[in-house]
Image (cartoon, rainbow, N blue to C red; front, side, top):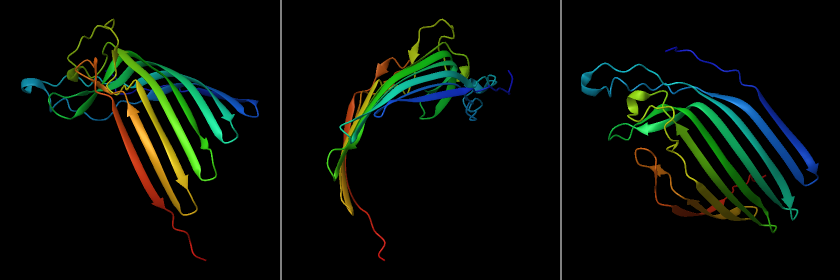
Length: 222
């Protein structure tokens, strides 16, 4: 297995101001993500046997994105983006045995796609707000590298499975009141749950958290 790899990474982006309040954008690029340097094969070789070859590969992607930004009500901006990534040797992490140590490995093929929506702005002289929502789906098929840590089906035609960090639905919102010296913010976060089980076929419970912050800005005295 070669210890050298590389990729020519052309990228192109375009922004177009359709009207005074509407902006469109597009992007396409080839992306290269080197494999991590950690090498835990010797420490986790079974029964003192010979460690398997270091076969973790760099991930190579075709990534595209389109989106629109629209100003409304003078003080608010709405954004909507869609993205898609097609990956070869897609990197993911797995938990080693019963430890909390994560070890990277490669899916032979994979994809990540999602939609992002946001609204932000001010609705009074001292008040501002924001809302963000994201839908994400990322999956891989087969295993092409890091096989010592992944005792799974190596068939390149095996079914697609979720990556470990996928959370299908994520949303957060916040409200801020600010004066010259003081500010206070209330924020809420919702997540539908990350993946669980050995094949990432399960989902952890949804969670919701809230934060309340008060701040003071010190000013120079002339």
